[in-house]
Each structure stands twice: as structure tokens, then as C-alpha cells.
Length: 374
Image (tube, rainbow, N blue to C red):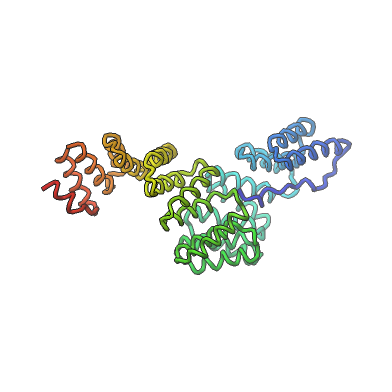
């Protein structure tokens, strides 16, 4: 989550009456808990304050900020809206945070609406222009994304998040030179921009600059050791280099940091199967976890089936290939693998029929395998 949207406006001075000091005590207690990393306790302090001061807009706003960081997005939206109703002195901020909350909930149209409302009040709020750019990027409306990043950079030319965001768009459009230039510019103005180092590393890897890619990934990792994507990307790089044990280590670290990333399980499963140890059982477990996270992905079932064949579990492999084909009926590789499993189970005629289907979908079948059918 972009912490730039989470700054508090507790320093605003309001014409409080005799209860001002009492409210300040609640506020100070909330901020002390926040600094200790206890977001729940911080939220509770503002909830207690609101029992005594139910019309205090700052209490609603700051509680919303903490809820946003605590992933209580719907409740945060309610608090930000309440702060606006109670005449929060600078509504651009709760409007922006409502947009960010909707973005986190996946409601991108509502996010755009509230970012737009914030910009109606302050058209030069370049952070919100960046936010809009990121939403358009997620929607794959790349021209509008670039337009918003450009507007943000016209106002603040050294705004690293906008440079990095525009770099992402150029990277997806295949313009690696412009993307690398934006990432490098972002890094030049913000040496802590770990996502820019990570993304530039991806470009350098794609261009064949392996040393440059590793250097960027290592810098990203040093800046933010909790950023799982850097470990994932290092895993992919070492997998491509066929240094499978290193790849497995990086995928494992990625999983430690984000146990819900199916791609890390998928790629670790591939690395385990290809490593000199031929850890097929570990590979099956990884593919099974990827299936648990995304049961509708045909690739996961196909990969597990292929690994089960290496373990000699042809019946279970056949179940996986059947599932892959049911999910993706034109998946040629799954038909080819199912043919192999059927032949191992002495169902040669059925296997040869699957080879025909695989060939029709453009898969290559070896002469040795075709000879089984002749």
C-alpha cells in the first residue's frame, strides 16, 4: 500500500472548547500506539474519543487512515465520508483516501470517481494524478495512464512514483528504452525506490544484461527486505540460468513473505522437478498449493500431472490431465501428456487418439511416440 496516502492531519488546529485537552490525550495515545505498530489499539483510541466527541471530523479521518492501513477498507470509507460530512477542513485528503480504499477493494471505477472529486478541489494534487494513472494502468487504458503520469510530472518533475508508474506502462507496451529511462530517473531522485530497482532489473534481464539485473534486484532487496517480488524475480532469473537450488531458495523466500502467491509455488515446483535432486514429491506439493490458490488454472493441473507421471502415479496424472482439458479444451500439451499417461496404463488406442488431438492443436510429438501408434 502506498504510504503517501496515509499521512495524518492531526496537527490541524480546530477551535476546540474546554474538551480540547481531553481529545488531545486520546489522540496522543492513538499516535503512540501507531508508532509501536499496534494499529488495532490506535483505532480503539479514536473510537473511544468519538464516544465523547461524536462530531469531531479529525477523529473520523484519522481513524479512517488507520483502518485503511489495517485493511478495513469498507469501514475506512465510512469514516472518511463521515469526516467530510462533519466539514473536515481539507476534503481533498479523505476523498483521495476513499478512492484508495475502493482501489484496494478492486472497485476501480469508484476509485476513479473519488480521485476525480479530489482533483476538482485541487487540480494540481499530483499524488492523485499518479493514483489515477495507476488505476488506468490496471484497467489497461495505457494512453490515459500516461496522460495522468505526464500531468503529475508537469507539476512535480521529480516525483518518483509517477516516473516509476509511467515506466511500468512503457514496459507493458514493450518500449523498454523509455521504461528503463523512467525507472532510472525515479532512482536518481529517490535512492530508496525499491520497486524502480526491481522493475529496472526486469528490463535488464529481458535485454540480456544479467549482471545489471542481479545488481538491481539486490539493491531492491537491500532497501526493502520484505518485498516478495524481488525474491520471486531472482528465482525466475536463476531458474532461467538453470541454477535451480538458488532459484528454489529465492522462491521459498518469496513464499515466506507472501504465502498466497501462486506463481511462486508454480515456479518453485518447476525448479524442484528440474533440479539435480529431482524432487518430484516436493514439486507435486507445490503444484497442489498453486491449485488450492487458483483451482481454475489448467496449467497447474497439467504440471502436477506431468510430475506425477515422473513418480509413476499414472492414474492420478490422468485425473490431472482430464481436469486441465476440462478447464481449457484446446490445451494441446495436456492432450499430449494425457496420451502418454494412457499409453502407460495400456490404453494405447485412446492415447493415440489424444496424440492426434495434440497434433491438431500444434503440439509436436516425437517419432518414437508416434511409432507406438503404428
